[in-house]
Image (cartoon, rainbow, N blue to C red; front, top):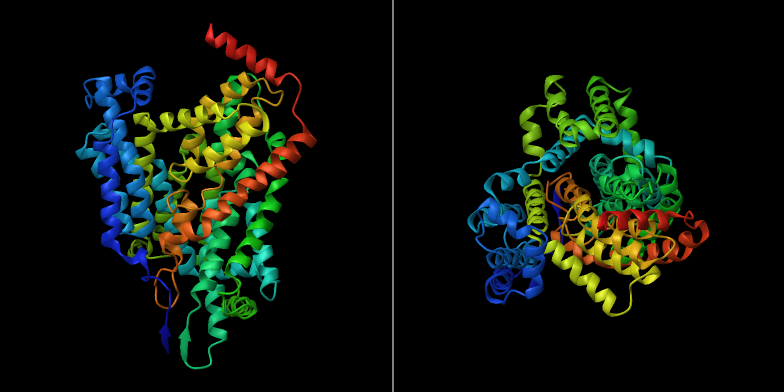
Length: 535
C-alpha cells in the first residue's frame, strides 16, 4: 500500500526560512544592542536588586550594564517567537540557542544556565515523552481508547465527550500525563477512520482531521487547569501567596470559583474546533476508527504482562506526583518511565531512545532557559510593571477592569514562560495591587484572575508541556511524519486564547464572582498584613 500525505505546509511566506531568520536576528540586534535603555528599566533593575545580583555573579559591573543585559534578554523574546513559530532554524536548535546566548553573552552564571536546561521540568518532560513511547509499544493506548471513547459513535459525540472529559480529568490529575496517554489514542482513531475510507489501495491522509484531533485534545486539557488546585503547581503557588496575607483558600473553595467553568470551557473548545476545521475535514466519521480500536482490543484478549507492568507504572507515577510532589518533584517520578520498562523487559532501551522526540525536548528546555532569563534579569518584572502602569493610566485600577487587565497579561506571559513561573512572578505584584484597590473581593479575586489565565497557553508551542507533547508524539502511524507544525499553534490557538479569556471574564468575573461572592473580612485581614509589612 502506498501512502500520500498532504500537509499543506511549505507554501507561502512562512516557508521562506531565510527571510524569517533575517527578521528574527535583526529584531534581536535592534532591541538588544541598538535601542537606548529606558530609564524605567535601569530604575527597576537597580531598585529591585537585579543589578546587585548580576554584580555578585560577575556578569555586570554597574546598574547601567546590568540594564543593558536586560535589554539583550528583551531582544531575545521576539527572535525566539519568530524562530519557534516559523522554524527558521530547526525548533530543537532554537531551544539550544537560548542557553548558547546566555553563555556567550554572559546573561546568567554558567551553573545557573545548566540548571535551567536540565532541572526538574526538563526531566519531567523527558519522562512523559518516554511514557508515551512505552504506552504505544505495548498497545495500552488501544485499551484507553476503548475505555474512554469506545461507547461513542459518529463524529460529533466523540468530539464533545473527548473535550468535556479531558477538561474535567485535567482539573484533577496531571494534564501532561493524560496528553501523553491520549495523543497516541487520537492518532490511532484517526488512522482507523482514514484507513476505513480507503478504496484505492493508496492511503490518502486527512491532515485537517489529524490536526483537529490533536489540538482538540491539547486545548481541552489546557483549559481544565482552572478547575482545582490539583490541576497544576501555579494554583498551589497562588494559594501560598494568600496564606502569606492570612487569607488562605481551601481546595473546595477554589473549586467553587473555578470548576463550574471547566465543562463550559470544554464545550467551547469542541465548538470552536468544529467551526474552525469543519470545512477542511474530509472524513467526518470516527466510528470506523473507534470500531477498529475496539476490534483490535478484543483480538488482544486479556491484558498481558507488558500491559500490566505499564499500567502499574502509570499508576505509580501518578501517585508519586500527587502525594510526593513536594519532596520528589515531577521529574523524579517521571524518570521511572525510562527505567521500569527496561528493567521489567517491557520495552527495549533503544526503542525508547529512538521514540522520544528530542526536537520537542530541546525546544522545551530552551523555553525554560528563556523563562529564567526573563525572571532573573528583571525583564519580566519591567514588563509587568509597565503593563500595570498602563492599566492605571487608563483608569483600570480596581474591580472588573483590573481583573481583566491582570488575566490578559498573565495569559499572555504564560505563553512565553512556564505557568508556575508566571504565577510566581506576578503573585507578589498583583496581590498588593488588589489589596490597595480596596475592592471587597481582594486579594482572592486578583489572584484567581492571574492563576486562571495561566491555564491558557494555547498559541505558542513553548507555552506548556501539553503543546510540546502533542507536537512530539503526534505522528502519522504509517509514515512517522509529524502532524503539527509549530506555526499551527499560532493559527489555531490565538483566537481560542482570546475566547478562553472571554469565558473567564464573563462567566467567572461577571457570573461566578457575583453569585458566590467573597468572604467578608478578607480585604481587611490582607490590608493589615500589608500595612504591617510596610512598617
